[in-house]
Amino acid sequence: MNKVKHSIIFFFLILFACNIVVGQATITATCKYSKVPLNTQFQITYTIKDGNASSFTKPSFKNFSVTGSYQSTTFINGNVESSFTYTLVPTAVGKFTIDAAKAKVAGAWIESNTLSIEVTNSGNATASNNSGNTSKNAATSTNTADGSNNDIYIKAFVDKANPYVGEQVIVTYKLYTRIPVAQYGIDKLPAFTGFWSQDLNKENDKIVQYKENIGGSQYVVAEIRKVALFPQKSGILKIDPLNVECVVQVQSQQKYNDPFANFFNDPFFGNAFNTVSNVKKTLVSNSLSLVVNPLPAANQPAEFTSSVGNFTLSATIDKTEAKTNDAINLTYKITGVGNISLIDKPKFDFPTDLETYDPDIKENVVRTAAGVSGSKTFSYLIIPRNAGEFTIKPVNFVFFNLATKSFVTLSSPEFKLKIAKGRDDEKTTVSSTNKEDIKYLNSDIRYIKNNPILLSLIGSCFYGSLLFFLILLLPILLFILFVIIYRKKLKENSNIALMRNKKATGVARKRLKTASAFLKANKKEPFLDEVFKALWGYVSDKLSIPISDLSKETVNEKFNQKNVQENIAQQFISTLNNCEYARFAPDDGSLTMDGIYNEAIDIITKMEKELK
Image 1 (cartoon, rainbow, N blue to C red):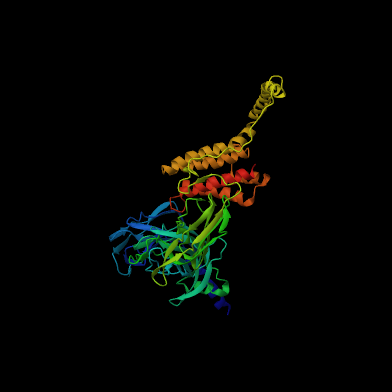
Image 2 (cartoon, rainbow, N blue to C red; image 1 turned 90 degrees about the vertical axis):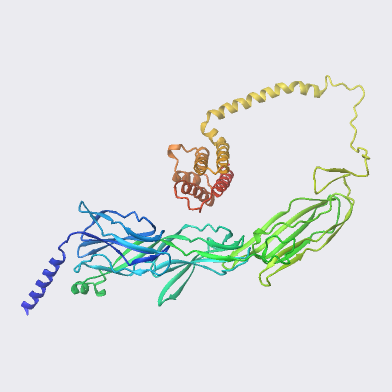
């Protein structure tokens, strides 16, 4: 019995000694496909075995675009196995050779094999027979969820493929995953060329998640973005893909040709050979094409502008009887579902005796997962200048009803006004069409002045009066006041910190004015430089922080000392971050020059109120 026990122990010792023998390091390039269609994603993996690579150089991938990459490292019988996976998209048609990758192992450079890929205009991807050189005794890694395109991807959906011009279209971007997602962020937003867009995702809204079975596999689906689009022209309009960067957690389980190694890898032993690694991936959604139909030209009313949807109209006036120079309020409100923000103001034909001003416009736009709805209100202030009876004629609002596929005309009511003569009725009126044309009433007769006449007593003399002495002393008093103010200014000028504080706003506005000139000239780098200097210079001068000590941490500390509201402090730091990102990050279209300029003006205005 002891002999058998000793034999088993000896067998395991021999087996363990064989497994720790380190072979020569190799690097192998593998690809699942040898033929792929144009603009189709596929992956290439470089595996380094029997060695720890201190450096890795990927090929140039000429004629291919790299859309994602990730790296994983596993330990097999004391040896390190590293893999580098790249997601590629072909950009040209033809037969191409992908050059060898290089890795530095134990101070020496080794090269992988090359791969031949044929790119076709269409068709399906063809599996490759050449998967690279493998060793019979080496361990291979099989991932139940390896972060491939089948495990996690993004897909774009549209609720209408053939909308009308101006019709609301909802685009939903869904993230499908079978593996844990540690974090994600949108890397590049679509440009939505040819559309007017509205983001339907609110900052505080939770992402809609649910499970869906696809091809026998269960996925967790998250609706990460939803946008309402309103096409502005007919024809075929393309919606570009959405790029998302995410970090996924990939769990690998090692399988060995050695049955004893698999025995020790049993779950009973706690899966000691399983590894979980964070993998960074770039996901690209599919693009969409919409065939936008033009609105019917037949029976299109002349008043139609661009309103498409389903709307109601209400128009009210607060009084129909008033006196001259009294204020009258006319409210015109449009409510419904559709492109609310694009509705133009109504064109009322007011009588010339009624003085009117540009309307006060208020929008109440509601953005939900179902789309855009709400109301738009136009409030007119009317001031009658003459007595009499006047009529405000109806105004038509025309929109295209998607339910009936026809144009609908809504009319406001007719308002009749009775204006009586007021107590302080003036004898002039201002034409509403031209404010500078003053009309005199009752022909050319000008009325007698009713102002009181100033009279003086006979024998009164200005010389020697109280007013005379006051005027005589006035220069002396002014000189004394001048000396006091002058000394105060000298004292203030000697206080450098105080002067910087006072001039902070003026210096910032001067820089923003220079930035505005660069903005109009579309010079991005000098524009961003001036905005950045305006923001930092403002807080440096306003908070008396030396340039050498200027940082976001010191600024936050000063904000707390000055009791600056937390949301305003965060907005200032966010504006700085956006400016830095636009200066040094690639131009992805997510931050516009106009947006950065408006943010800078807004936050400096708010900070000025906080730091008074």
